[in-house]
Image 1 (spheres, rainbow, N blue to C red):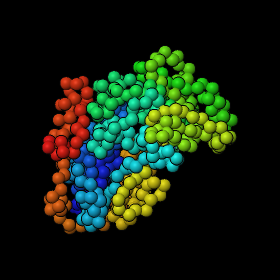
Image 2 (cartoon, helix red, strand yellow):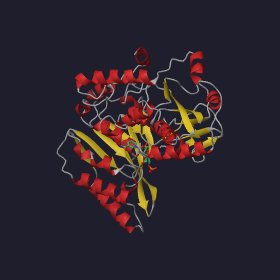
Image 3 (cartoon, rainbow, N blue to C red):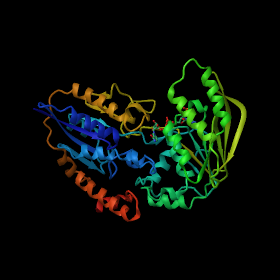
Image 4 (cartoon, rainbow, N blue to C red):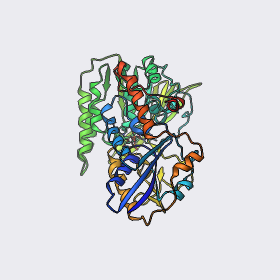
Length: 433
Ligand code: NAP
């Protein structure tokens, strides 16, 4: 029987699905001992700190992660950071294979003047803020203005815009981090503009997310019907179009035709606007866009500009992988071949393919890499238990039992408040428990 030691760095969906794939690939002659390292005191990655709190069903996949984690020969070491507590060199030397599942946490930059002004932030800060990520939960969000602009036409932009535009009472029964919930209750923002640089037929939103917008109780969602009709016309002139695009346009048309009776809060969609400059003296005061046109299948800018007066700009235009060690990058993710970076080093998830797809996409993605990994295995190293190294370094890691205690504590705190949990936000508190 060959028992290989595998290290997985990152306890998000891609990391857990990699562990599951390895567990499923075990045979009578082949076994894996999996150690999962996570820099945060908590596992679950984007399921905890990315998925919007008003989407609790998506978070139920955490039950699958817990099942994987409580399977034999799996150990969690949370609160252990690669590049700080541990070096990659140590892992690749000790383990038979190392799998990087480190995601993509750095928000892409717009690269326009004024982007650094106070009041201009990235979704890479805003999303972990409302989700109680320990590094972001204490940020002071500038919600003391009446208008916010969200740049981007993907599901992250949609989450951010919805969180800013909904009545915060709708978040009371969720696990929104308490300081963020309080700040949102005191927010002065009543108008949110979500701005896409291309046409309605090019957006990266998905139709279920669009179709749920009319359910917002106190927010009028505004889409200009003629813009959708023009997009439908352009689409019909193209030789072929995919059903997702048609579904999106149908969902947007339904929103455009909906009677707007909700008044006090407003979420407005804009298309064909490229951000040119953010202006303001001491903080964001307005954003200037160039107005674009669609010609065939290309989008070109015109001389016309469009200005929105606002106090907050959130850019949600994608993410890049951030790693302290030296790696070769390709379009913001780690260069790899079917998940292999080199030798016994592999990558899965957003760090492998870039920030795309839903949580389930990581299952097939991780399985591909793990099959490749298993095919390249030779014979197990005889390198002892890595626990000795962790103990020698005096690293205060959080193991699966300790995480379960934290999890129970959070859930118990939520119960009297009618919430799924109250998230703990400070690293010291996790360690205390
Ligand atoms: P995304 O889906 O790739 O969308 C990025 C958006 O940013 C695109 O509309 C893109 O426009 C725009 N953009 C890029 N650079 C820009 C620039 N310089 N100026 C203006 N706009 C720019 O990325 P995401 O929203 O970060 O989402 C990442 C992944 O997570 C996606 O697969 C998404 O579906 C998934 N996700 C899913 C859910 C859910 O299932 N509920 C929730 C959140 C995220 P162009 O198309 O013109 O480049």
